[in-house]
Image (cartoon, rainbow, N blue to C red; front, side, top):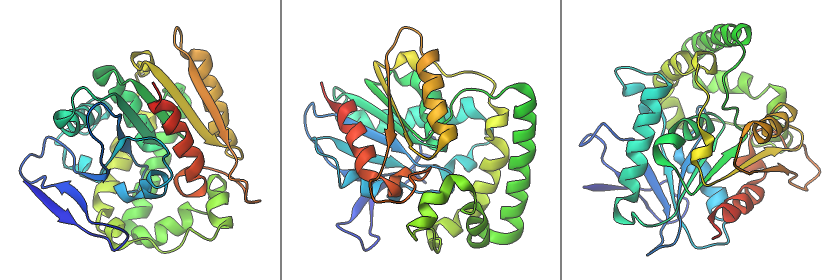
Length: 285
């Protein structure tokens, strides 16, 4: 059974009614395809939602279906850690692909969603993995402990101040300079505010400081990484991944939106055309 939802921007999207099967996550079908055309399954970032991929989807040149998964419902898991979250993502991807099981799978993830995509790669063995502004390898022990403390403090601030106030402070970080410069770091949608309790739990329990195992990226036939040219930490992460991905090539792209503003962490809205170009590359035979 499916339910139609509409956000007022373009035609209605289709989303499963997940009260029927809570072992998988809900998703939006942002673009359809037939036969053996590629199937893109995309995971958004922290505090995000599936519609965050719409600007990217609109700029795709190739023929591929596009399915954006909602991650806030991960908070419903009785046990919430990276292995359980990755398993839920893998079940969801298999459900999405059920009607076109022979279509090449392109698994994409932005930031937090990139960590999940990388963690699910071993189970799914996608034809291509696309990481957008994502750090996927474990932190050194002392950094991991500090990151757990930082994320616990963020969760407390989110619980205390609410999503609107929290996001205003979140976007003051230098990694979102491009978002602020373009004047697109404004009011948070009501749908994100409603997910506040879920993101509080996800912040605490899926902190990168708690991830101990390195993902097996070599299970992806090809792998691509993209970061904003001014997002220096993530540009360095792409080069680090390229050096660590033994036996498999990894294509690293540094994006420049070309509009005179910094291109930093929020690439889905800062440079959607660049992200779409990488996805088109990943879909190519």
